[in-house]
Each structure stands twice: as structure tokens, then as C-alpha cells.
Length: 217
Image (cartoon, rainbow, N blue to C red; front, side):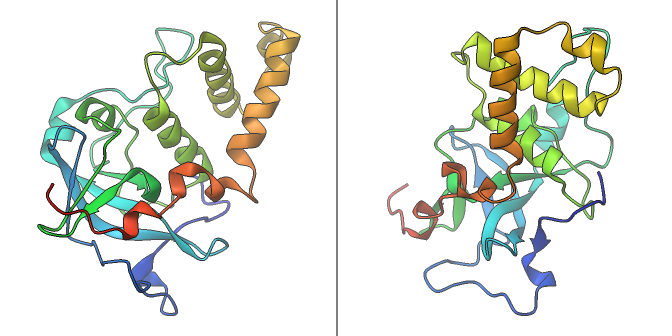
């Protein structure tokens, strides 16, 4: 992953940060999917210093995720080329804090929106890697993907991924495949994904549910 700009820090790297009142320290807790299946264990909490709060759980994935051996979402338009894959040693993933809730009776984190297949099909990273904004966008895309995503939205997401992959090389042949309206939609989506000021203001980072005690689950 790129080393250009670091957005995220492990909580234990920051001596002036601590768990806020009302938030349990979930490091070491199991993470369960929508079907109550364990998908990993929380190893750390990831802080964005500009937002001054925890925005992701850093999860060491369960062996069942690795054994599933799915390629991540985001294939190239050329079916013979895979845009990115999970390599040996990539055994961590991030989950936005707003997508999980807590069971404080038996100390585990769970999600009501993400299933095991989605976790298994999400791009992972190797412990110690610097997490860049491109990886964050890939993860957000995989967690938000659904069967009923409109075709034009899926197309724009693919365009964004293609732009990342090509790094603006071969611009003429790239852009002559899309319409003017798609370009406009691409610009709106790209700005939404990469805007530095409000990236962590999305609903996926709303931690209000993370503070609740959820009995009986």
C-alpha cells in the first residue's frame, strides 16, 4: 500500500488517546457476521487524528475467511485480469465502526448487515501495512455492495476503480469508452469517496450504536 499520506493510526500508537467514557475496549473481542458466525477477532482500534476518534476496527480474520479463498470484489473490465487479489499473509481487514454493534453480556462485536461471503470477498491487508485511502474505498465498496445496486452506480464504481488502477495513464482510450453523463456521475462519486474533509462523516462511521449495551443477543 502507498506510503504517501497516513490517515489511520492504531490506538496503542497514540499516547494521548484513550478509550472514551461509554465505549468499552473491544480489543480481543470476537467479531460475528449477520448469521452469528465468527469472522475474526478485534486486534486494534484505528483512529483518524483529524476526526479525533476511532473510525475502524482492525480485525484479524478467522481461518474460515482465508480458507474460503475468494477473490476480492472489483474485477477488471478485462475478465482475464484481476484488479487485486489477497496475497498470502494478508489476514487483516477493517470494519467501519458504524457498521457494528456490541453485545456486552458475552463480549463480542456483531454486524446486522454483512455476511460471511462479503467478509471473505473483501480486500485484506497484511498486519503492519499502512492503510491508504484507496484501500478504504475498496473496503467501503465491498461492504455497501448489494444485488440491487443500480447498473449506473455499479458502472461508476467500476470507473473509479479503473481510474485508480490506471493512475490516469492512457487517458484518451480510457475516457472514450464512457458517456458524458457517466463522466459527470463519476466526478460526483469520486469527490464523495475521496473528499478529505468529510470522508469520516458518512453513516458508516456513526458510532452511536457502538456505545449502546445490547442485551439478550
